[in-house]
Length: 90
Length: 394
Ligand SMILES: Nc1ncnc2c1ncn2[C@@H]1O[C@H](COP(=O)(O)OP(=O)(O)O)[C@@H](O)[C@H]1O
Ligand SMILES: [Mg+2]
Image 1 (cartoon, rainbow over the protein chains, first blue to last red):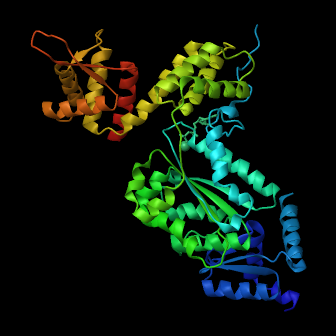
Image 2: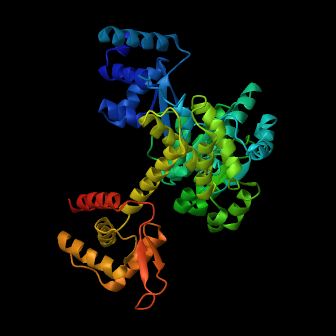
């Protein structure tokens, strides 16, 4: 996917923002924080995972998502968000 | 003008959660614990261990296992073994196995969801996490009674057996169960009971001398030099010994006595500070006792307080208290309970040590029961009860 396509979705940007803030979260909770349903959340998580930005672990029925630490893209996104938030606080 | 100077050097050393390096008179028990768990330092994956620690309040059960946990973790990490010591007070989780396990899991995954699965699944998840991170856990279940009371045999069975049936996987989770005495264990089924009962460490009540040693250690950690005389320590040890060899009470008295010394800017913790501290602690204990009384028990006790407040006497007859109680009932606009009922209240209150009763030697009308107040001023009691009763009204 092209970068403009990945970031064209408000929900995907919000997912990244949430994960940057809390580190790791299960799908239902991400959905709750986005204010959308489970299926929609899953779809966007899948896109971000296919891009290698996030990864997940399965624990029984629970999936926990987080940034993919080995991915330079993930690091870049985290840095970008951090710099953005920091600048806004100044 | 003299400069204000606190007797304390470092109050945090008297905090209930502080774990000192040295535990006087518990080195034998600490060594025993180390022996029970020595396998962890060599072949942690081969087995798990279960130990029970029992003893009365303030015998050092919690601090002993915390000290052990810190020591063995340091030792294991030195050898490149990833070991976590996790101390959970079951009562804080209302004895709920799910919440207890969730706490352990959230050490590894802080935002782990709280809903949507059972305690048993959570236990499997915990083992999976430990496998993935190649980590071992010693889980201490402090105030284990509350877990047994709430969850019964099954929970304990799950904790002990689930990992045993995992084929060809390393053993991950060891348990230390802390409880006051072994009575509650009788409620468990025989096989669970026997898996727990193999290693028991019983902590004896501290003697007065042992309490002095413990207190002296804390004095040097927490107080400035020469601020706590030997007599003061001795008096505290005496009181703590008479309350069941309770080191917790001793340390609390030491701290409060220091506070009284500071409040009066004495620069030295005198025995009188200890006496003040003692009466304030008893007052706290009484307050929590009072809250549990029902309305008529409170009214009856208010009658007692009013009687002694308005009289120079040390003892009252039940008839005198009944009259005072009747007046109180009128004031609160409730119908007084019968004599038989009041007699029951009196039994209950004296069983709890809130009032005392004794039988008078020879009265003109034969033997009769006399009531008196131990250790509390009638004024304080009245104040406390009025407050509780008004809160109840609202
Ligand atoms: N042998 C000891 N050495 C130093 N401090 C002790 C010792 N035993 C108990 N204490 C202290 O006394 C208090 C009560 O001990 P604790 O472990 O909470 O008792 P328990 O859990 O048996 O009720 C704590 O502040 C603890 O640090
Ligand atoms: Mg304890």
